[in-house]
Image 1 (cartoon, rainbow, N blue to C red):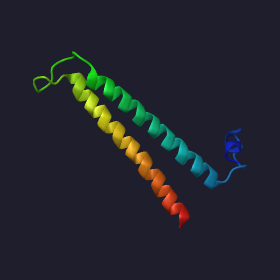
Image 2 (image 1 turned 45 degrees about the vertical axis):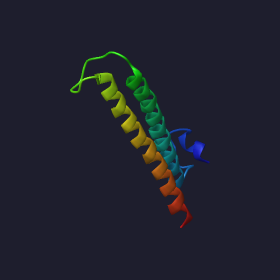
Image 3 (image 1 turned 90 degrees about the horizontal axis):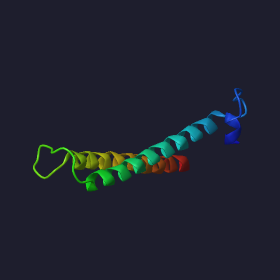
Image 4 (image 1 turned 60 degrees about the horizontal axis):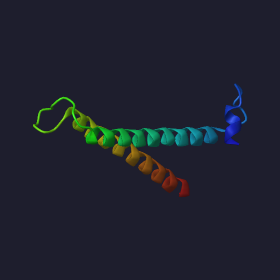
Length: 93
């Protein structure tokens, strides 16, 4: 069982495939969480009023940072979807 792999110092109970699968899903979970968090923070930044003016008139620094956060969050979420889809395709072969 995968959970037995992290029971102590001796990891002989789990195979290499279990560890690879666990690392894969934990990595995807962390990336999905960061993508969602960046998306939420990005929305708050885009909607924030005030802040320092940027290069363009009418665009604040908060809005620029918000759009950057939304872009990076979307990229992270697309990576999670692509990695999960690739794993399912290679698993069936």
